[in-house]
Image 1 (cartoon, rainbow, N blue to C red):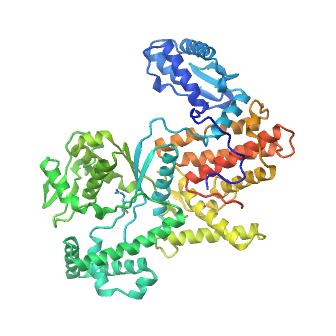
Image 2: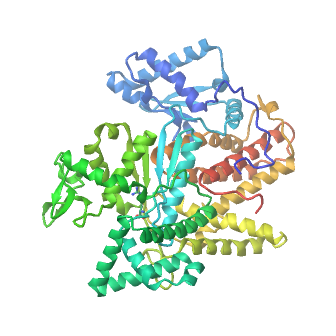
Amino acid sequence: MLLPAGCPPTIAASPSVPTLLPHSLLEQRLRQAVLQVLPDARPDGVKVRPCPDPKHGDYQCAALIGLAKEARKNPRELAAAVSAAYAALRAGSGEEGVEAGLQIEIAGPGFLNFRLAPEALLSAVLDASASRFLEPAAAPRTVVVDFSSPNVAKPMHVGHIRSTALGDCLSRVLRALGHRVITDNHLGDWGTQFGKLIVGWKRHLHRDALERDPIAELERLYKLENAAGEADPARLDQARQELVALQAGDPENLAIWREMIRLSQAQFDALYGRLGVTFDHTLGESFYNPQLPGVVESLVSRGIARESEGAVAVFSDHTLPAKEDPFLVHRDGAWADDPALVRKSDGGFNYTTTDLATLEYRIRTWAPEEILYVVDDRQAPHFRKLFQIFRRWQPEAEARTVLRHIGFGKILGDDGKPFKTRSGDTVRLAELLDEAVERARKLVDEKRPELPPETRGEIARIVGTGAVKYQDLLPNRQSDYIFSWDKMLALTGNTSPYLQYQCTRARKVVADGGAVDIAALRGVTPTEPAEVALLKHLLLYGLTLESVAAECRPNYLCNYLYDLAGHYSRFYESCPVLKAPEPVRSLRLALCGFTARVLSHGLGLLGIESPELM
Ligand code: ARG
């Protein structure tokens, strides 16, 4: 799926030399130059990044200003000395590559601006194309990604798209950069709700309804018992007893519970199949049950948790300023305790207890450098407490692992309130995807009536599903966004149908143009500004993925691809491809091919397919 048919053959790079992108090559030499001038400087902070204003150059280094301050030197003088050292090193190395025709300028208070020659830009793009325009991470990390994690016996609803799309995209990007990624779907498959569900199952189950729509039936049972429990304390007590029996391993209750999980898992699998999402593990909360008593004992024996009103809880240790302390809340003008419960007064365990056991297991089993929890922002207080408790409980393990809550906002309707159906119910994910595909189908039917119906159906599936995901990944993840069918399915603007369309257009040109001898393009000089702008943008793909991974922000990739499509459009409008004389024709055809490849690869990392035609 990632490398579409009809693209120019990739050039053979010598496999022993990993291709570095220009910013890395410049950076390497610049660090050497800095060390020659300032032998005590720490070179890691010396970065070469795209120039914020392309008028001033292609790449820029801003680090010398800070280094000059530290070394008490005049920044512009330092920049001049470093630039001279750079030139000498470059002359001494005897190899030119991307630096052939390189211009370095000192600007403003001490910036270094780099401008590549057009031939060198092309040459760098040809090199980069052999390695998908990205660089593998110099220090690959093991990263556990906890995402999606719906609750058993409930339908997946529109809100689940967020954790699922974000987590899947981040996992794909991290993998593409060469990190070792372990995805784990932490299903809510245990907890007090099963008491009510079991009572409901035993009293009111409709077998035929269960067969028709298992999740709807389980939901009905739960709602029924929930209402019954509110009206009648005896029913609530019965639910509690069934829960205790389940926890004690009662065979009948265990069998019912397993059946509920099986039915839910089938629903989840169908949805994940439609979304193209897979997990390495689906351990679920119940997996950690045997560990929970030990977790609480250990917390108590180390003085981290203590008894409080019959329950066991963790309180503030007052090592943090009150404002940053997750175990304190400001209430009525004073700071009050906001403890995390790890055992209830009835002996049951809490969400936090399970998450502590999970954390311990993950670190012991996979030794990750990082764990990402892709969970909505409302759970931020839970994660702040969890991470704090873990630090107090297992300081050595905590020091080796970066724990990050990757939060996100809500999906809103037109009225600015959480997105609901017209009758006020939550929107089921399955129905939402159905509607997206149906609406896409109408558009495809209108635009391409000549295509066979199966082809139109396939395009509609890809476009509709992609539109839902892209709408979700495009906003800054912490902002709420307004759900809009019209916006997400528009063929213009920053949408996935637009990107998919540009991708098929570029592929079409490539298919019409025939094979290109890429090796023959070395030494060709791109002269049109639109060609040069497109080349430069192609070289920023890898850096973009690195910032997506570093900040866990897929929106950077969306915006990069949208800009790429824009550069491509401008290029395509101002530069005829198939009618151009050689070698310009080949150069332009190659540019179409590279654009198509990066667009479809990037969409693929967003978890979005690109159709063959549209
Ligand atoms: N099942 C939880 C919910 O629906 C999300 C679990 C997130 N992951 C975790 N390790 N707590 O709210």
